[in-house]
Image 1 (cartoon, one colour):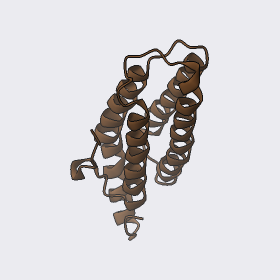
Image 2 (cartoon, one colour; image 1 turned 180 degrees about the vertical axis):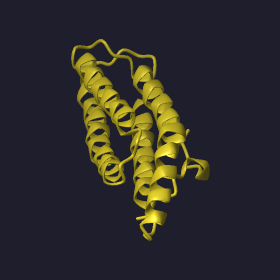
Image 3 (tube, helix red, strand yellow; image 1 turned 180 degrees about the horizontal axis):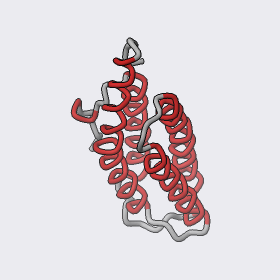
Length: 146
């Protein structure tokens, strides 16, 4: 089942919301890669395909987190350290999953479950608080929601 973007996830910051939607597309592609094999052990023949999908997710996460972190720093977001720590923890978990995948000890369903839970929690809560701060900051600066 394809996950759809929901307006309640919008932060009100255009660039962030666009990137969140792209993030969701990558997650959907990852889900499609695993369709029907969520509980199977990953064989050698599938390992590189799954690794490629994880690598794409990690690369996009680095890009997206960089965008958010630049916005938080420039706006002096008071919860920056906690928010950045959540980004760092996600990237570390992806690295750990990549290692487990390459060593044959990863089940696809565990990847999907973690990524979906993280996305819902992070976008649905953590990024909402950041979005409120950024909107207030931009309004005080007389700027639009870039």
